[in-house]
Length: 201
Image (cartoon, rainbow, N blue to C red; front, side):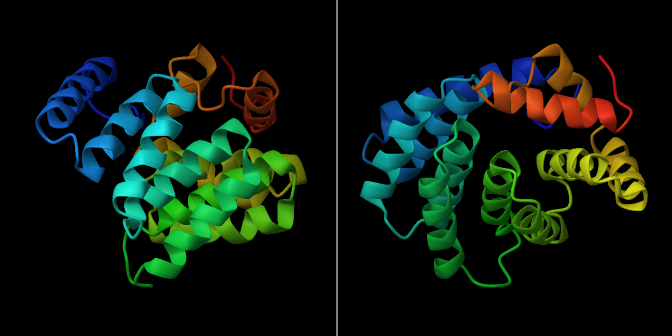
């Protein structure tokens, strides 16, 4: 997803194979359903991914990793209330020093971005980037947001960092190799913001 490595698509295929093996050997493991959900989401099968996250949560309601990936998936498909609920559940269950807590903040930022709530977006996206600075998705949303509100300093700061950390990520959004949002209007919001920030196909 982050477009790291020489062959991201081969990495996706490998992840899918291993998640199937994991599930076949440990079908009662919450992590088996989690990783199956992750590979399905990566392949754009969001509804199928949701079912796996739900099952993973049923098996282990206290697994924060399940909750925040579930929230991210829900935010991307437009189920904003559920996304916020599960993200906050993850935050409440997590240690405040959890280095991966940024995923829950990212889910909240994604929901706010797609809802057009700039104030909430800025709050959650800033927390997400501070906690997990290497994730390009939140930073690309911040770039689109900064372009939309005309904050050139914010735009340049995150644009530079995005290209330094994940130089191939934006291109994968324009080509459709990374279809983050199944609803065309949501993908259009993101791509329009990136065009305004100076990116092009």
